[in-house]
Image 1 (spheres, rainbow, N blue to C red):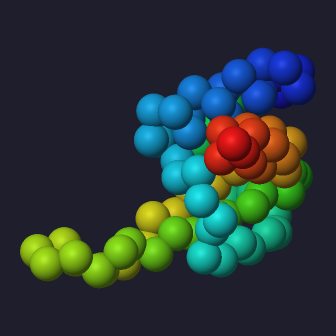
Image 2: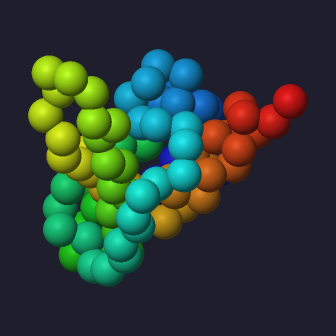
Length: 91
């Protein structure tokens, strides 16, 4: 797993590129990993690790199907994302 500075750099890039939203999630779940790729670091979240699943509801717009965007992240990657997204939204 990358160090804290590298994780924050990756989280900042993910937010800035729109890969993951910078707003509060609509729902967050936690539990054992399911082998999904972490949106922040790109590594798999194994069954031996705790995974957070972050869900964002789509805004209802004409011609856009409603639903959820779902992201899987390690706990440390979630913390880096939280820090970077809050920093980005500060005045």
